[in-house]
Length: 451
Ligand SMILES: [Zn+2]
Image (cartoon, rainbow, N blue to C red; front, side, top):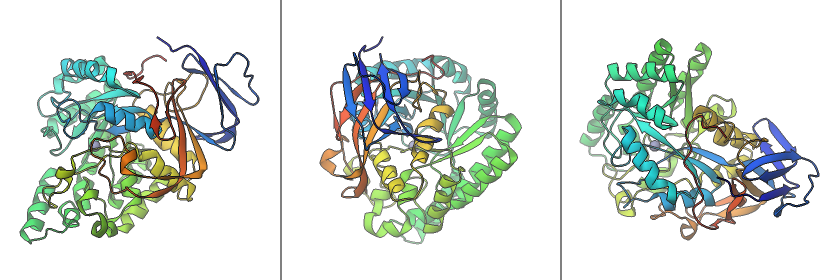
């Protein structure tokens, strides 16, 4: 199936992972058909003048929780993928901790059928492996899962974590199929221990959360995953890394040549423990946003290529769920729509090169989850997924502009450098100036699906 038609993006500066290049891009039948200077506009249906603008590959957000099915009081796939489109994200990889959890082929197929007609952007689906479904690994690979999420502790949806034997077994399978396992890496026994200790001390201020989950919880879990990966060759991706200690381990993993990579999220780079007094539990996430020196270590890791990918960890909750005390408040917030705007602002302020956006937010996630080069780059033969940005304009994050059911995020009111003008999905404009255009045009994509 194709939309037909053609669109020429003229005079812009393409931001690729390897550098910036001034070139036109022609998209025909949804696929990039030519890149070059002075491409002919003859017979082209639509032309966008991108002079003075930056043209990025569509963002691949490897880490979203859209909450459908089963948790739609928090949000749903329609709102979530509209938010993605408005925010320059053209592919989302949806986490499996919806209800029921995506732990078998039949649940996977059911979720795919339910979501596809509602998708405003393309999407891939994760499967989950917990303590009793390791035998479903193959059927989920076969169904087209982009990867697996493994929760080493309880999470939204209360999925029981695998024991060490199961963990070892699924790492063996990961190596066999070359499929990525995304880990929530925190040692749950330690989280429980520290949490009860801090609770017993009577603390209830928002930063108590920070002390209830100190870096050792992450460090221990990552160390174990590195060992298991070393013995099995399994492909480990540690998501939402928050601590300097974890970064040190990632450096060591690279030195050892292990199949271990890491993700961090904008909130760990942009907020720090200093902000709890201002935002309270609005910025409660797991693992927690930590002190300044952790933030600085994460930035260095982004710039030096130690962090392999960024994800939004889009995790919407209701205002009420976010308004409880530090021990009861839900962890996470809506973030897919602010993902690119926040990182664009950081790059335009000089915190990292613009090329890091294309590398960490498009190309590397697409590679890791088996959808590259169809997704994640601007190249002849790739899907025509682009984001056109005016680097000289500004964006103000306003609740009324967010497509979230509950627009609750610490970033409301933030004034950012850069403005997303167009989001283009397979050659079709799906959002212009922050507003979604037209109906749902997204499709489900499987790992290694031929373009
Ligand atoms: Zn998550």
